[in-house]
Length: 362
Ligand SMILES: Cc1cc2nc3c(=O)[nH]c(=O)nc-3n(C[C@H](O)[C@H](O)[C@H](O)COP(=O)(O)O)c2cc1C
Ligand code: SF4
Ligand code: SF4
Image (cartoon, rainbow, N blue to C red; front, side):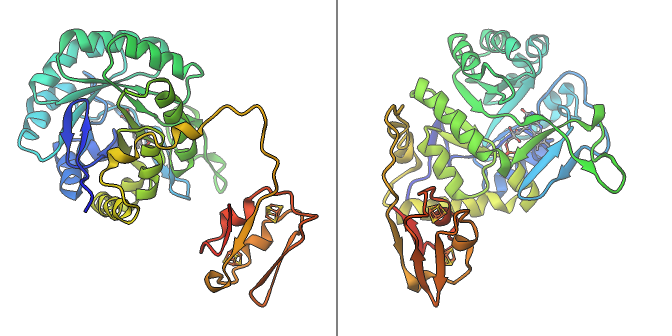
């Protein structure tokens, strides 16, 4: 059985799965539940001196494993985190990462006390890329625990911000925060689905995954030695594998366990172990960065026609491969696959949507 233990900034985790900052980590009680369910570490809901008052409603499902939210930071004040919540996690079976933001003043006021109260690491987060360096410097100056900088896909200069945070002393990067602003309107009422300014909201969950993979890859190509917590759209153990392959050290998730229930953590960690066994890997660290050498800048694009394999025994005749071909190049008759090579543009879509693996391209 694969050994799932993972080292993050020099600290050992039981496995690479972390519950990222959000409602599930609203308090010690919430965090403890996630640990019991199988998360190896937890990032608290972002802590600020004053408790947040959230608009109602502030979270809505939008289908396909994704959410919009207009939730602010923690609705427990920092004083409660410092006096009660963090000390209550002292004996908990997991690593506690205190999220603090969104300004250097908040970090200055809270970082030391959060660590004294029991935080094993800090994660600094801001709405503005320009503020991140001062948050990192302040946290590093006041504490001796590892400091993670959380970066947002909403910043056009995300990679510059990563460089600057690392130069300022950040020990690792959490990528990414939710994306937005986005909007969902209830078509029965014509009103925004969520409260808050114009109902403008933040997108999280499955819709984010390819963006997260690309950003994590960009960060890891630039800084292969830096620990990155890949966060955004992870909903399966296979998604975790993908994040590790583009260089992540650990993987964060919030939307999926929120939607599916926290037992998702244990199920996903078990599945990751089996996946590693089935594929002959000894640990998550063996996957780290495996995809990066393949992300090459190509000047001569490949135009060779795709070569397909079709295994009739695996085909359930769902017809998806035929439906998605814009050029009507495929036909399935009595489990016999026909391809009109003159019409086929080698786009690859048909094989990518085959649910059984009957149709593949090499
Ligand atoms: C309802 C909700 C509240 C969140 N609150 C915070 C927060 O307080 N601080 C923070 O850094 N990220 C917060 N996030 C962002 C998540 O930590 C995470 O970066 C993002 O949702 C992408 O991961 P996911 O797709 O697995 O949810 C929140 C996400 C959700 C869904
Ligand atoms: S590769 Fe594209 S064009 Fe060719 S058969 Fe499949 S979907 Fe059609
Ligand atoms: S998508 Fe796959 S399973 Fe469905 S008909 Fe095509 S080959 Fe068969």
